[in-house]
Image (cartoon, rainbow, N blue to C red):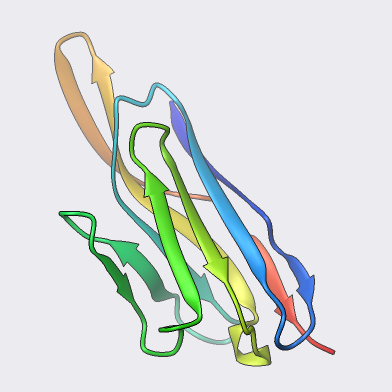
Length: 123
């Protein structure tokens, strides 16, 4: 069984920074298409940042220039550095990835979500 575990959320003042981390654990053979999503109260979950094939980062317009996504596909981790935070960034943040597990000689790929970490931006 595999899981993603996030850490690094918390309360920060406007203009501050936070770094979110996410690590896969369990029977992990491969780790691909890592991404961060967020969901604010009363709103739909939205993509914040992702790393597409070839390693190119992709960002929502609302976070471009402020957030940076990075990953290590060999260590099965993905991070999100968030700078110049605003109250509009307040949400629960979730990491997501396609994780391959090796069962005998077969690889099964599952799209896995983390449990979420709360980010609150307030003065």
